[in-house]
Amino acid sequence: MTQTPAPTPGPTPGPGAQTCPACASAMPAGTLFCENCGASLGTPAPVDPSARPVSLQGAMPADGPSPIDEAAPISAATRPVPASVPGSVAATVPGPVPCRSCGASVGPDGYCEQCGTKAPSERDHFREAPADWVAGVCDRGIRHTRNEDAMALLASPVAGERALLLVLDGVSNTDDSHIASLAGARAARDVLRTPMPRGLGTPVARLAAVTKVFSDAVVAANQAVVASTPEGSVNPPSATFVCVVVEGGTLSFANVGDSRAYWLPDGAPGVQLSVDDSVAQQMIASGIPRAQAETSPQAHAITKWLGRDAGDITPRVGELEVVGPGWVLVCSDGLWNYASEPEALQEQIRLSGARDPATLALALTDFANAQGGIDNITTTLARVVAPQEETHG
Image (cartoon, rainbow, N blue to C red):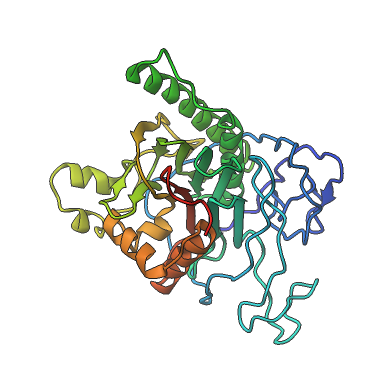
């Protein structure tokens, strides 16, 4: 049943604020699309790198596999990745958007100037590249009518120093999950801006301190999802949560639900960092083979989520010390549906031939769409380098 959402308060406007042409909501300068209704805001004013993004408040749920919405097939867009913004503020200023059908320029009215095809909104497909070693793609996929995934990235200018990769996958059979997931991702990002605590110097103390920070981030994301819930909704928005913080050779990670984080080193076996909160994971734990569990009818029924009707939102938290070069991958199930095992993802990385995260994120997203694109796809990556490895070249 389609329900008209109640207006959701947008973020507090600052200098150079924009007004959404569709719903008249005020949006901060640099916003790609309206956070209330999803309408395109065109090419925004440049973002002030020193400005702190406004924290929203929200929450989420999920109780089973999402129905697939029929939609005309589309391929991933080829919009150039926005230019990086100095410091640790995610880039949001878009470049020219070429037509998906013929590659020609798209006019200010949103239609191709050559073939007349309507371009998708930025909410359907957007990219972030806060530094040249961190990038992400968030794509609607082929079968869904809107993109309920969201991502939020941070990165220091120095490769390997510090980065944040955060993905929320909104549950598609709930109200306004596309709004809630984006609000939740940005709220959690604000909590995780500062370096992870070191505790009292012991591994146990550090993990306890890291767990507290991640728990606070999950609470902030949950509050944001809840705050995005339409008044009177009987099907409130919900979402999964997964995050990796890279600090040198330390990967700190947390998740709620079945979006995933992986460490994929060069020339060595990869590892799935996160552990799904799902029926499939329960089946695997009971001894059922992974391939069988992940293709069962209830494979994507999740047992924990964010949202107004969520129960336990305590994240699973862990840390891994890594040495040598490799990729940190944080993604929604729209990608890992087609390459669940770490070695399968490493093979796709090899086949892509990509050496930078922006190119690789798009290649993996294109791979998922080529396999059917039955769900929204979010692919975020950080390139972790060995001390002797060149950052560029």
